[in-house]
Length: 115
Length: 117
Image (tube, rainbow over all chains, first blue to last red; front, side, top):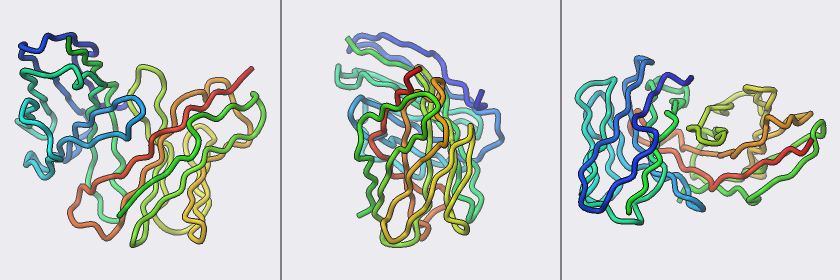
């Protein structure tokens, strides 16, 4: 295992539901990421948190709301999603080491289906 | 603008034969290059990286990659493929002069490797 745990692994929700994705890392890293993976598209970086502060938000719709209460936990709150939001959502973490490339460690992902 | 290209959607190889998965990149400064692998129903796993130094980089599971600056390529290779190597392979690049400690990776679309018994 990679040391990054995501729950749930699968989620089916209606467009009016509210749900949350959870990510926990046991690696002592100081940065966490949310990605969206869709077929035939490059991996899309959604949010980056460094030292619990959001440092990147790549024009993600407001129906996705991240939360990072501490360096080990990351949430993605979902509300009023659209069918095109169906995808695999991946969480990753890394430790910033200058000159070393910041290897990212990924969780297994949450497969989200919006009906 | 930074970019990564993986020109092959799929690569098929017989077990025991050498394999190559291609990656070319474009950055304005010195590149940091990565290969990741994704097995079915799993997240991405780091395989290897090039930061500086020897152009031939060795990584996990017997994989290696060669950095070629003149051709702006970073092809992934393995001398003898296994059926268990069948997976989705992603190349990624980051420019070393980018600001910030957690710099954005630019990802390729992925190449599906199928190793046939």
